[in-house]
Length: 302
Image 1 (cartoon, rainbow, N blue to C red):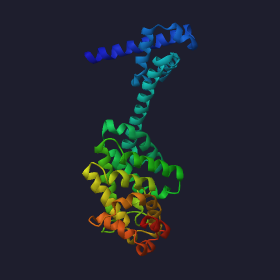
Image 2 (cartoon, one colour):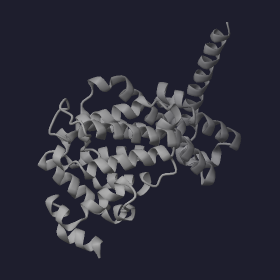
Image 3 (cartoon, rainbow, N blue to C red):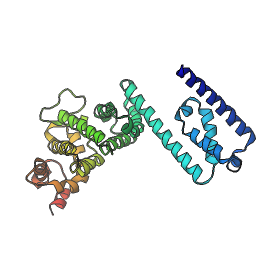
Image 4 (cartoon, rainbow, N blue to C red):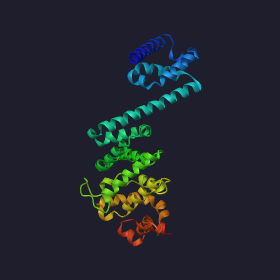
């Protein structure tokens, strides 16, 4: 019974909104709205503006209200429109996340990574960690084919960085965990023979300077001990993967590592596995065999 009343009330509400906005349009020019419309009606219109369901179901009515609220002057207009844009942005993010979670099996990489980019802001609210697993799977398996497409690579790096550096520790830890799993699978002690592409290509999404800088700068010294451990293992495996990956992939490793050297040298100590790996990598003879430019090594040995 109450559901029938709710539907009836909603129908009446929508009818009144439609009639009122049509009347406002006919009686009041938009550029005069701020001077003619009384404050109680301004408050009502501003509140309706935040009704995201109305925006989705009846966009024409909502757009008319939005045009009126935009004309309200001063802080009133600024606050209302800012809140509306924030809600609209979050609503769009939820829509993108739902599409990715629902349709990922049918999506190609480019539309999927764009949905991932748009969907990241809503992750802290819905906390569906399958979203992260889908992103990592796409980046590991599909990015190598698109690695020469600068715009697509840039979006991919942005998504990976936003997940690694996410303000919610649970989300950030899950991203590090799945990246760690990919690294162990692709370039761990047991060589991955089932993965597609060149050996090591499944971690290509991590072999980008901004990503490695994020892992070294914030992962290795993270307050979350599990993230520290994942970061530590990831960097050890990357530093030691030359014999397991193709020449092209190793060249990408070197290219990505060079900007991280100022950070990595801070962890170069003999009482840890990572520290010893860093010291070994920066040894002039070893660095030469690893194709690391001698000028870079010399700079950090000074």
